[in-house]
Length: 492
Ligand SMILES: [Fe+2]
Ligand SMILES: [Fe+2]
Image 1 (cartoon, rainbow, N blue to C red):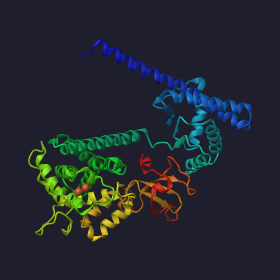
Image 2 (cartoon, rainbow, N blue to C red; image 1 turned 90 degrees about the vertical axis):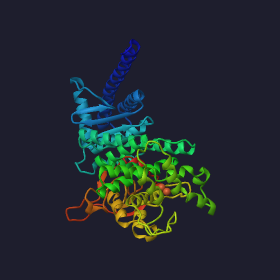
Image 3 (cartoon, rainbow, N blue to C red; image 1 turned 180 degrees about the vertical axis):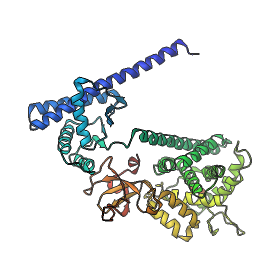
């Protein structure tokens, strides 16, 4: 039953939404008219002219007014429509000419979306509008938008970001939805891992019901949209290492398992074992676990107890159903190495379980690529993969490392690369064509001169010129921090 109070609060919420929409529609129209006026006056008169100056004042003011409504301003073209934030502007007869002109100009420049930050200055509008005029009349070429972005960077226009049109709105919806779902799954998994670890730490017995649900959604998503979840593993939150590490290992393990053709039920068992592989660490004192310097022999011995402490902990978990033998084996074996030179020491020769070997590969990769308290520079992901594959002392199963490489590509998502065009780019996704594993899809992040581009173009490095040469190739992998690049920003 809905009470009158609830009804009226719902009504006032709808009212508020409608009035925001109304404000956006009105403000959006005003904004487009001032863009139109600025374009027109700058085409006719030099920049010092009064009319131009007034038009720029009006443009700055109308943008500010819009920014105040929702603290963000995004203008997006979709077909014959213009959206301001999420509100579609209605065209009518008296604004048709001005809207049509602005729409045409943006389209001629290759712009699909324009995002404006609230710190935008009048000077930036002046540079931006002049560039629009200049580029709109240039001959069409596929690099037009990119050149315009470069010129905006050179002109110090940092608070207006332009992007190409989206393929189609439906694609956007599907992609965005998949990304949203992946993000939620990831966050929920981190939260439940945290819950289990802190219960164990406080000596309470933890329930695995929620863990099961989290692993189920990880498996579902790896099966339906692998890339979206794998991509999130590069966006590590370094403060939450203990928990994100377990979730990442779970994602990598399930992805490897999928490549090996495991059934859904097997993937679930594997995922559970992977998520809880380090659960024994929740019984290691925090000062040893988080120690930044090297560990003393004694401390190292305590650290090395986490595999069998994990087995003990798994015995104590509630709600697992039958006893989680597989998880216990993985917790016990994941540091043993294939030649049994790891820990715990095995007295007799034994065959490690496939699950343990998969988790060891996933664990090795995530640990090596993460920046941790005692590891100030993360090793580059491509080097890690190469080393994991070629160094026998790592004690990993090379077939499983190869499976991980097939998932991630030779250059995993988020890797910062320097191209032979001298541009710097961030790996966006592995090449869908397995034969082109050395040529991922990248997003350009900086120009050859080193100027950062907030939303550069996506480039498939397998692309060739008509005479059969590659348009761009990777020269080497580099540390993104060196160029002030945050790879997480480019995974969008
Ligand atoms: Fe471990
Ligand atoms: Fe681990």
